[in-house]
Image 1 (cartoon, rainbow, N blue to C red):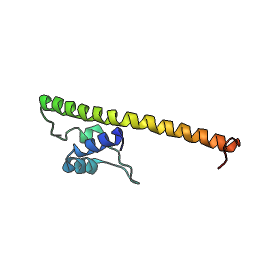
Image 2: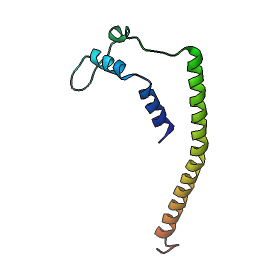
Image 3: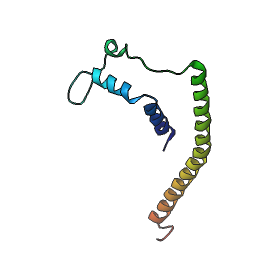
Image 4: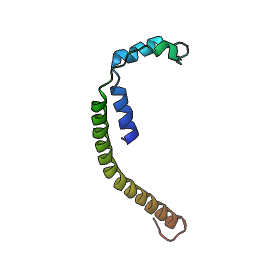
Length: 100
C-alpha cells in the first residue's frame, strides 16, 4: 500500500459517517454524479480538534510517513535493479548472447 493510499484511508476515517451522509443528502444531480454547491454545505458543522491536538496529530503522521519512506525507498531501489536485470537478460536471450 502506498503512502497516498494510506493517507487517503486516514482522511476517509477522519470524517464521521453522519457528516458524509449529510453532505451526500445535499447533493443535486443525476446519473450517479452529485454536485454540491457551497451555499448548501457551508453551514454543516464539522468537529475539529483544538490546534495543539491537530499539530500533535500531524507530528505523529509525519513520523509514520518517514518510517514508511525509510522502508519503501530501499525496496524501490531493489525493484528498479531487478527490472534492469530482467531487461538485460531479455536482451541477451533475444540477441543470442544467452540461450534459454
